[in-house]
Length: 332
Ligand SMILES: NC(=O)C1=CN([C@@H]2O[C@H](COP(=O)(O)OP(=O)(O)OC[C@H]3O[C@@H](n4cnc5c(N)ncnc54)[C@H](O)[C@@H]3O)[C@@H](O)[C@H]2O)C=CC1
Ligand SMILES: O=C([O-])CC(=O)C(=O)O
Image 1 (cartoon, rainbow, N blue to C red):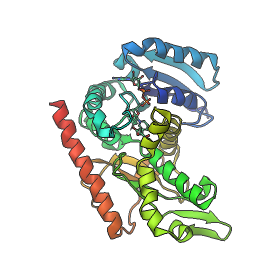
Image 2: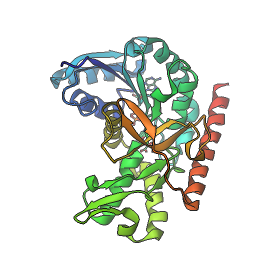
Image 3: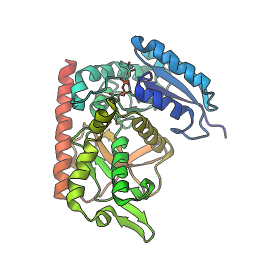
């Protein structure tokens, strides 16, 4: 059966994540090798020429799955009929800044684009917010697009999840594909809590707990956590630009698992609207472990939370509550 065409919006498409992301989508990395797509690319007028250059390159690359490209600075044209919206547009932080330092510039963009999405996107459009502060931008988008179901609005913490997998794989000298079920709790910021208490590694003797194999709680409760929390800043220091290829790749992972389903027995981290699970206040976009099936995510329930984890999960929830009020004050 031929699949129906999918329209994918990428905002900020002339930027560096956009430039890495659009060819991945056009190659089927996000939605699979049998899914034809039409790309909608939005940027602001000063970037119009660069955006047109990206469109020219997409034509030149002759991607078999790419059936059309809309490149525009008009938010209504960009949002019309889209089934998936990847919201990358905004201002990245620079060295020495925290992600919430870009708050006032970016939340107003998300307020404005919420209503365009609400009015013009396809029904049941799935939204992934990448631009920082990602959780709070997603929350503002949700608040200003009340008719989009809350479950359709998510933010990217899959990059942090993948970073955590990568750190464990390097430490144990195993391939990253053997490591699974790390969790990123909370905010995509330096207060996020990368949790390995339920993570496992596939070995020749079967699945083993990461804690047992690493056998160094001091590293797992210290340096491992700070390395993942600070990885974005480390990339900025090294590249003088924030992560782009890894962010684009993780955005594809996020949407692919959401739409096509996560692997059996494996969970992934997604920033989703809290329903109060694990004592996380409702009304925040908070990163949880989730599994995805038939286009829907659900929070993995029943995990045992120790005291160390509880304190870290609460600290990142508190930061999100503060960001929420800061965002509201920026919009007054
Ligand atoms: N959640 C995550 O894991 C990650 C998030 N990020 C965030 O993603 C965002 C984009 O990063 P980069 O691509 O490196 O930045 P960039 O500056 O290279 O590109 C951003 C693009 O957004 C455009 N833009 C600005 N306002 C816009 C608007 N109102 N509508 C549409 N487009 C608009 C800019 O013109 C620019 O082309 C930043 O906020 C960055 O902090 C970056 C890495 C990881
Ligand atoms: O750190 C930044 O500003 C960019 C980002 O979100 C990341 O790389 O995780």
